Image (cartoon, rainbow over all chains, first blue to last red; front, side, top):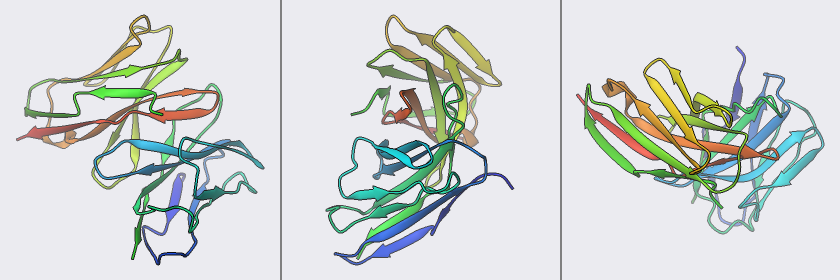
Length: 113
Length: 109
């Protein structure tokens, strides 16, 4: 099956811990994105990457970090510096310039306990 | 910063009625997309309209784009209970894909 896979579906984090959310795609897409969604709200862009080994900050990058070592993988680390990490995190990919349609994973719900 | 702003924030209609939601954006665009999100799930792409297009249809969906007013509308005709979801517009420039706040649509059977 072609698609984009996020794991885990649910994640619990203790205060002060770093956690990493996984995002893998087998669509051969160049661009990948991470969004945060709070209850009843829209999506806010955290980081995006248009090509391997390159990524840019979105609107709310503070307290988050990413890497893009492989085309198919774009993991997101939520660091202890993120003061309010409880949210729904969505990963997406798209073919890139000229082909903007994005495909989304099913999301990871992160809760701080 | 949000590029797109949807209006209304929430919409409740009866099955069979039409639903119209609007999106306004701030900067020039190459295209505008509409997505749907069922509760607690990822988003699904519905339709894309390019800046040189004024109207586009896909099944029961009709999208219009007015670049002079920097606005777009999504019309769902003959709505069904299964259309209950949140709908988002999205615009992209220089690789960023920015979403609006969304319209939550409830279709009552």
